[in-house]
Length: 242
Image 1 (cartoon, rainbow, N blue to C red):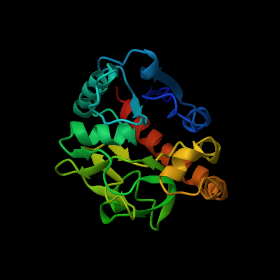
Image 2: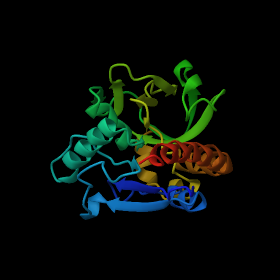
Image 3: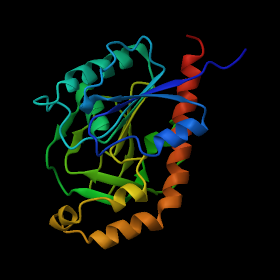
Image 4: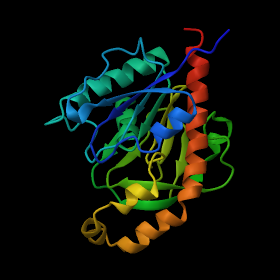
């Protein structure tokens, strides 16, 4: 029997936090992308019924900051519907915080030390049997860009990754919904365009931030492309009986 083509729905919440490498990876994996630019007025799907898989991208605001962002309530409702229906989800940065929020966790603004640029991520014991995280037996690097933090995980959600300044870097909600505070889709090319004055205000050296991203770019590509492919494999397996 031929494998059913997979459609990956991606929700963009902010123009500066687009899908990045996900589009090329999806094409290489033979996956169709349905990109919804919510910040530009695209409609959020009203139901999980027709979705194969969902990725919710980042944004520089809290997951319930609805003023001026009328799509966020619909995005939260869709995430809950996907949880109920068992549709695989990946929440990235704001998307991760949105999953924490709808799952009953806590997200706090301007909490702790901001993370911006290449950051070391340490696997946690609960990831040893996780379909996406079991492959990580040692620390890896990811690109961070956040000031807000998930300060409490949803009840029963296993912690999968931590960093020096942010304990709750990643978790799983239910069986097939994952959250990453870092940006798997981000490349050194995107980091090169970051505002240097803002980096200085965070106490960072813009040249160092950008050079470190270039130094790790091939590693980032290999690590997070394989991670994305594992997510696609889960979504493909879930979609075939439907």
